[in-house]
View (cartoon, rainbow, N blue to C red):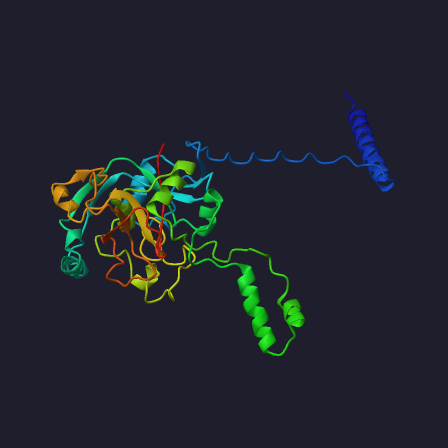
Length: 360
């Protein structure tokens, strides 16, 4: 083939390509549209973790090692293959998974406060038969979910439609205080109201504080509406200790609102240091109801170890178990093994609740 013809043909092709490109540019400059480069296909969004429970939204499937700081619990939570962090759809309560396992329940080794408590109760309320001994092994065979915090006023109102709390405050009260302050400084009432601005009426300033003045009976009504339940006394202590055999899972003032730092009131949940499972305010802020009947010497029947205990069949005092201590209590009462009982119908300003759910 003639080389000149080949070169000539190649030149013609190049000229045609050039003409097409020039025409495209001219068209674009005159309002036409230049051929667009093909856009890369968007990557599909990662699929959300499906919830194995109809009642829950999965927030995190795997435990966060920055939250679950106990390595053994971290491993056991992962081995369940259940979502670690979920939100109850009906109440908005965030819950964390507690895995099956064994722990020692009752008086911590060397806990002189527990011994002193026994002595005090024997002298002042002998019918209570109070004791945190003997310490005994408890086996929890099934994973369960527990509220990450105590139930707040906002969460209680969402379900029950009312707020029984002694410590509740709305924006109108705060605004009235601001107005009074401006009037004292020399402004007229109208000027003070204008300066204070329009506050949202009935905005609950204590919405994140734990609900209190709720009875054990009130908690049963909440459970009937939501499918939740109060934890057993053993489940509560298992989750509270989170692998710690000491009386507390940290320094008292760092983990708990108590009578030394509370200012005689409740405080918003989740402000103090959590335990090794990520639970807040297990000690302090408000006492928490558990499901069990209260018998002060119940642990005598548990000395050889028990599996999934649910407490005694009845209570001579007609009381249900309270745990954790509250804003009005000193260190004496703010301990992991401290047990207290009260009538199921009682409503007290330092008693609230935290709910559980079975992992099914």
